[in-house]
Image (tube, rainbow, N blue to C red; front, side, top):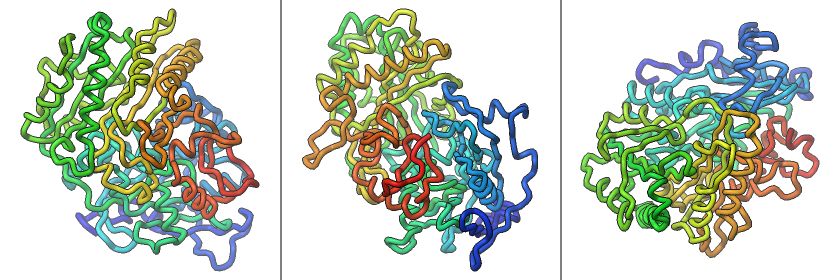
Length: 554
């Protein structure tokens, strides 16, 4: 074990056991099973109604979602996790899993069921994988900030994951995981080598170690692959992830934040169109897998509703030489009449009111500064991958909806956030991981936030109308690229779930195609192997490859 930290030390004495309890119909133990006797559960780890923690632990980051689970169980060790799953199934309860609590829809909320909470499993260490190879291990309850600080301070490495500090590793990583380092380093799952999952297979509740090097076509090889972008809540309870050959972050990073006042843009409509064209054209030209200069750049164009006051571009430059960053900013401003200024209002939880257009900071400090989690509020989200610059229809729809007057509805936190994408992300083939979108140059997240429950429907209607209008030419959704690869868009991101794309009980939901494209068939194969009875499910989960699945959505 490297650096004096053993896997046993990370998990605790009992947690070093990898085994299972085979229960047939969740009753008596089956002969010949490798048994891990479930440890007695500390009563403090079971949170029921009446407990002062219950209200907090029964809901996540998005305040739209509340539920009344029968109980919440805090998981701390492997044997306890096995016992928790077994107990839930013996009691005929639906188990759902929470790590950071950032699910955008109500997939974890679980009235009458059991929420299994891994948020106290936050270990990060250097250890060995199941084949005895050097690996970095991250427990699924660790937040992005836990992971960044521990990996960097102890080992000088990082993962190219998201900027929101409080997002949990459990769901973030198995959905793909991308962030400000991804153009240089790829997706988080591109470094994944093993995942440990509590599974239910052939009536046996066990911890399964699935590795990238497992024999091709084996059950565990399919299980591993399905956790490289197949999304959370589908196959079991993820306990930990292992990574190899992690990238080294730069010692410094340049931050840039510039804004354009809406009051000026409304006077110069052409500037809005030009800004979107400049942004889209730049990243269409500089997002190939062999890009060697602007793979150091990650930039976000935050198109706010006009009531926010300003449109913002925030950028992170990983290189020491700042000249390419300055050239990029100049390319954005080319041809605009409206002059840029400093950011004057918060946009999507991020506020960088730099007095100059750029500033250099140590990497970890800059990463902390870029936190975009924001406060707990009510929210709705949609997403899209873009392979080409914006079309005229898309730009016109963005202008129309972002300048629309909506009386008595606070739209100051309504945003079309356009992230730069591609470069090393696009160096991986679509079927090598479960993430099929591997030739995009931009990734969009449509967001709206509010606090008053009375405004729920107004915000939902607005964002749906906005999104549908932008993609009117492809049926109101960012349709996937066809065989000729001539479409501008290429589907949506599984980690930004949107039930408007359909749910599992619909006759023909859109989400399997838009999230997974033709990788969905293999995900269904894995589901049929590891969870054919659909014990782990939510509204947009992977459906077993059978029409007689007992349950598909709640």
